[in-house]
Image (cartoon, rainbow, N blue to C red):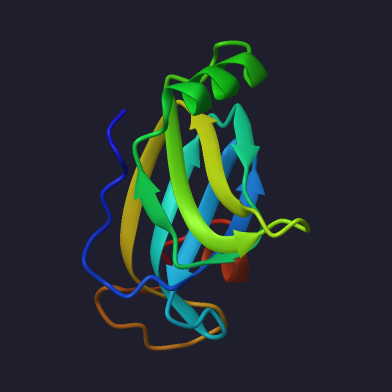
Length: 137
């Protein structure tokens, strides 16, 4: 797989927004308090190695060693591997990377509010965590 390509934007703060039924959704924005503008939705997840909150992610092609590691951990059931670096460090001060092995990934843009907000305009929606998993109401 080639590196995940994100649309132009300031995607500084990242978090695991939801992880249910084999689907992992990462949300990103400049500040995740009230809304986010980008979601990376990964389906049929077989392996995840990433913190729940991280910053300044840079998506890239996985290395051969990372690819082999994810395939071993997922029993070979990860046709797609998403790899990224971020600015978090482990307890020993080593830089950490994120890895996700899955079947599919899709990128969704648009403002998703993290609180009930009436009168949504085109391109706006409530985050799935607010409405219980639906996404586009």
